[in-house]
Amino acid sequence: MRLVERGHFIMGDTWGDGNSNERPAHEVIITYDFYMSEFLVSFEDYDQYCDEVGLPKPSDSGFGRGRRPVINAGWLDTTEYCNWLSEKENLPLAYHGDGSFLDAHGRKTTDVNKVHGFRLPTEAEWEYAARGGNRSRGYKFSGSNNPDHVAWYNTNSGYKTHEVGKKKKNELGLYDMSGNVWEWCSDWYSTYTTSRTINLYVSKGTRRVARGGSWLNALDSVRVCNRNEFFLPKDTAYNLGFRIARTAVT
Image (cartoon, rainbow, N blue to C red; front, side, top):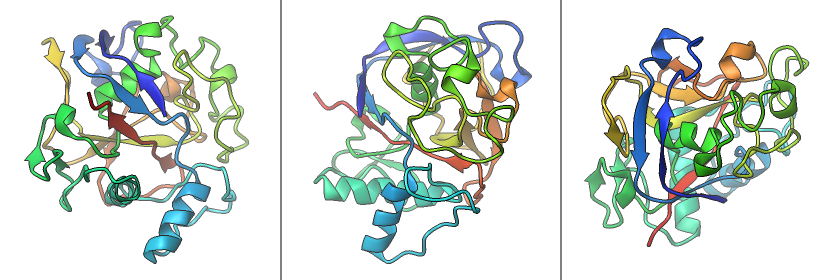
């Protein structure tokens, strides 16, 4: 996992050519360091989890398994994977069974800084890391202004997933944050406001946010500010996966 140092950034459409749900652009401050996984969770990772806990393995939709990103996993499936990984590393669980965050003492919380186990990134963490954190060079795609250097999307993917880490990494050493597969976030979807926000996390809603775009999507969807608001927690898709994060405990 890669360290993402605390900082602040303008979240949303900072180029003026985005979608309405990316506006208004607004300042977000993140007051804690966190870790983001270098790669998307792969079938190799997820199949080990399924074998150990006795769960059926999700379909690869004919694309292949191994180091390709896991797909066809619902939001709650991903949180259960995170809890399993926390247990293996002797860390507190990050999620209650209903999807709420848990603090280090097992109590429900909306303060992500108190969550010490492995989890999905918040939407703000995801965009901050995709932009390169405090090392950002201002790229429209994660790691480059040339999408073909960093992303698998509809014009170069051959309409299939690809093994993780085959494109250029971004400023923080993170791969595939633009394209390959959409990535579940911890947040519920909510519209943006103009207000400056500290440690943004949306704890209520009806649909979960996904970020990053995928092999199926056009160039617009693999920009670092693009948002997907259409997935219910139970939904699965052949272009939807995830990566993990963890608050850096001091």
